[in-house]
Amino acid sequence: MIGFMLILRRELRLAWRGGTDAVIAVVFFVLAAVLFPFGVGTDPGMLPRIGGGIIWVVALLAAMLSLERMFAGDHEDGSLDLLYLSPVPLGTLALAKAAAHWLTTGVLLLVAAPVLALLYNLPGEAIGALAASMLLGTPVLSLVGGIGAALTLGARRGGVLLALLILPLYIPVLIFGAGAIDGAVAERPIGPQLMVMGGFLLAALALAPWATAAALRQAIE
Amino acid sequence: MQGLTTHNLACIRGERAVFAGLDLAVKPGRAMLLSGSNGSGKSSLLRVLAGLLPAADGRIAWEGEDVAGDPDAHRARTAYVGHADPLKPSLTASENLEFWGRLYGLKPEVETALHQFSIAGLADVPARYLSAGQKRRVNLARLAVGQNSRAGPMLWLLDEPATGLDPGAVSMLANTILAHLSNDGVAIVSTHGGRLDELLEGKADHFCISARGT
Image 1 (cartoon, rainbow over the protein chains, first blue to last red):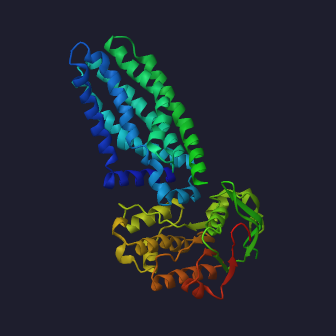
Image 2: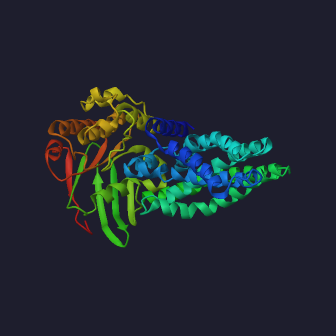
Image 3: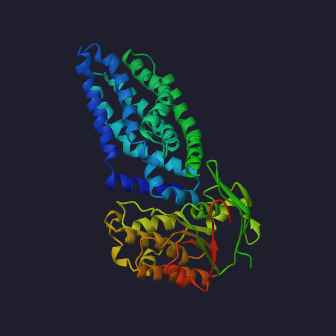
């Protein structure tokens, strides 16, 4: 636990002092979401129907922007070797890194999403569903993204490879996240979608650090 | 008094045998200076000894016990300095050192450690503003953090630690290593000759590693 907190605190300090990644991710999120109505039209009846899906697609693309750097800096400057040799297990490192990624990216997306929801004329219930689904879904993006970030460490065109590896794994989160918002718009119960997303989060919490640790071990060796 | 020993140690990277059949013995209170041409396997040997690379064959023992039996204990006794300096540019020298000290469960007396390498005045300077030599000194001060703590690492694996250091800093490094050896520590240091070798003379054995062999 001490190791987790030490790494998390360092990551947050690094993000606060030097990180533009989080700002870029949020700016991309807002800009991309704002662009869609220019392309598909501004029919007030259509925007609430497609808004949830668009916000979710853009959110997972935005979350991916900063994933490539999750372990790359530590790999380049030799920190990863020392982290591996430390008493802190690699799984704890992976969890702390994913937590830092979520706090510096996912939380900001979570805060910006309701504003975009207003832009898409989503009703109040749908905004609540959007917030709840993103609260459950964005940590999954960080945890699963960590696996991809570790697998592509040191690879040429790692960013592209990361997208190819991770985007298919994001599809279930997208389906149930957007489904919850659609359900709210259509005034259907959204409990089942949110419960499935909670299940994704629990599964990611249990499995992703372990998988990330295995990929990191491979990268170190 | 067995220290670190290896028996028939081999390392393969890709399809290439980096070294094989390597037998080493470094007693407590002694250093081993590894020399050899570029690509001869010095860094790979240090990484294998640290547990960062798996050995393709052979055995590494500490005080006669196979380290594979308790890798956590081996990691706890090992301090590793690689080619790169693991400093985050936006953190100050003392913040960088304190992080590593705490992560390794040591009581990080950062000021003392920085003073040991004559960089106490840089404690609050972000690492991005340090020269390559100053960064190296901060990295090496990690050793002093462990040295000044009880139960600090007993096995030091140093990969060309004098790179980028001026003669004064090399003397500080040599003094730090000698102090470690006087506490019955073990140091394995890869070098390309020079002042560090001279300063450790008398406390060190030499081992020349040749490409694809011993």
